[in-house]
Image (cartoon, rainbow, N blue to C red; front, side):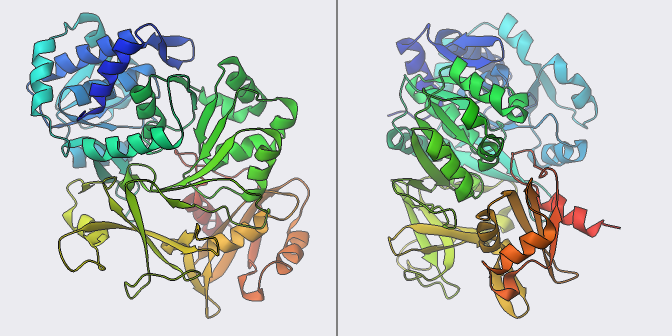
Length: 505
């Protein structure tokens, strides 16, 4: 039985040595050479006597970043990907918390590194690949000492306090999750991924590690193509990409720009999405044009990536929410009401998760860990940890889980408890709406709707909203914008929209 993803990499490199593993713009690498570079990197790290230590990777979304990730794992340590475009303050905050033994980078990012207060060792990945000699015996000994509950990586997400929190994922959690992902979506050596998500975002682990487990091929899509949907779709055809796993915002850009009318996608067989709510109208635009399997995936970083999924097997009207479906195999979902009893069908409750996918907790943050990784209130017989996601859901008449909103997006307005996600869902179904986003300003007690449209204006939109929403849910302020702001993960930046409203003259 394999303990780490590197065990799978060894097997894949032996099975498919000359097959292309990863590509980035004009660069590509086959499985044999990829494994060689991973072992060179791992030997270099191991020779410095690091074991079970945090190691930071300051590289952009490129093949070298993937080599570094696997090199760290093969050395018995755990990695964190640093976003090279993040503000220095955020990078410094992560480094201060992590206190990495070393940073793997390249000369290309020396100016970013110079701005950081870091005194430990720097490893240049290009020099290591060129100069290091593989020591298989040393790496074998390292592998014997790894246990599957050791950390594999730490992924930093934005904390509610503004301080990044580091979620600790073990080898066991990642492999448990990836084995499900590969089986559920039939990922195999013929799978060709078109990668959209950044490597510091939890969604990326699904396509990266399932590629390694199966010997698939993984194409890094140039980021600029997502501003030019026609070029993006032409790239998918050029590379014979048959599987994509993107955030809904990326899918919406393609749908809203009508790119699917101009370019057919005959090779595309799987369209998976996660990370935020997918507007049903734009999903239907994709399903009308592309003959593929579509699936809505849901989950937080604290469950590696996903804990529920829904393969779309029926017609869903533009006004319906797309279900997040059912729990993944080897993962259990509890929907708990405020009194910690199970919600019945139609009742809202907090989605909680138990099983092997769960993270170890938060790095150097025991109090935060204890607040959300808690004893299962339904089990009084033995210790059992569940993760409280903070997401409000319910079961529909078909027994499917429906996402309602974040606890954070649930507001009290005019005496009513309101889910902002419900407003967004109804507004999204209006003809002429490209995208919309609802925020709540506590200072003025107002619901603010930002929207994109080429056809609608504020007064018309408000009238349409009144026909779809109760009076108390109709937005108090509507603001038309040319383009939604997005954060580094490709999601709509709600924080930016709230600041934009508060800074209006």
